[in-house]
Length: 102
Picture 1 (cartoon, one colour):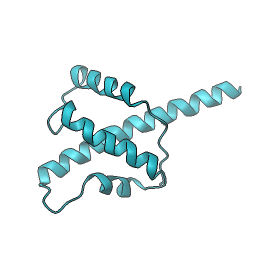
Picture 2: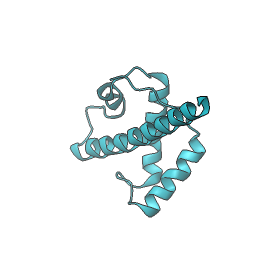
Picture 3: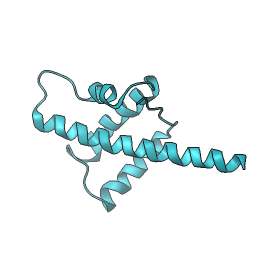
Picture 4: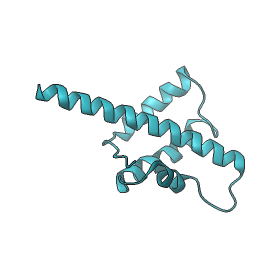
């Protein structure tokens, strides 16, 4: 199913992930500093290619012939975190737009 990413404020997103790492659990793959690079790639890919399926979007993050299985798993997990975050943001925006029409 195609996925349209909402517009995101990267500064707000960085603060969200800082809080997530402190309050929920450490981010996979070496913490926020390294995860943030992956997150930015996912946000950019979702903006540039809104019609991508989840599989196509994931393939934009997990690629390369020299990737280890452990790193691929970390990237998949980071991708999943961002995807769930974007879905939550899209849902909130949709509810806000619906409420504004009423």
